[in-house]
Image (cartoon, rainbow, N blue to C red; front, side, top):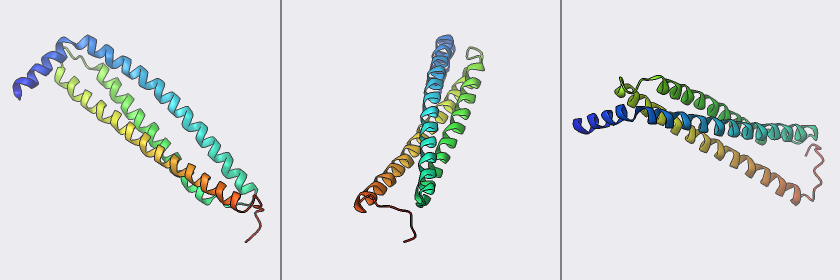
Length: 156
């Protein structure tokens, strides 16, 4: 085991420049994905806000939607925080001289990988919340259809 660890560290040391180049490319690619995902989330949140506002303006309870919207917003906030931690870890990784400190580089690489996995988990959790919201909207639409579209907002 010790020999394989030394072999791994020697590999890190000898392929340092190429590895750093790949890490930098991955970081740039992840940044684009983060920007696109962040924009998509913001569009969804804006639409959720508009929908809740429209419901309230029509004197229809938006509590269910507001609850799900809050869960989605929490997921988006977690996504942003997780990405920031990951990006900071990638910056730290790239600042390490892997030729002279291959052990430090390897350890930071493990940290960056685990933080990247956390982002994936947060995205999956947020997607689950979005699916719940969509189901609530579908159920609401079915209820409106069942009532013949005559939702007036009057006390029932």
